[in-house]
Image (cartoon, rainbow, N blue to C red; front, side, top):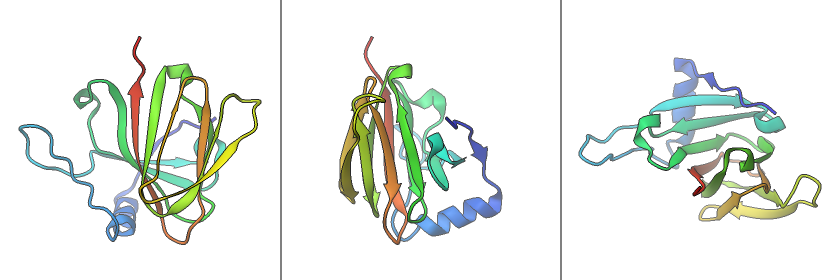
Length: 156
């Protein structure tokens, strides 16, 4: 299961910025601070044994989120780019996907040996997963699938 993040070159950042510009303008307005853009760009190849390349556009620095681990845009550039099945149970997290642009298939299953359920998603779709359940997503459209991801820590 790949969790390796790679930093993007300045050319790759420009390419990602150009790809998302027609659809979203990632701007953060932190309380009492000036508005700003993306905090960190990450590239994940074969994310969780998925296919292709996925870009994560982190909006917050680690010290800014109180009960969240991630608040980022996830960009799957082309058809068949995907994030493979993975769980957040090993980290006691819940994860929300808010589809901002594009279309895809979201898959979920209650456990590693259960049958997956496939759900078509598009702009406005929201999904959630927690506990030992697993989830995955695949771009099925001609345009980038752009998903806003929020990963929170489950209460202890």
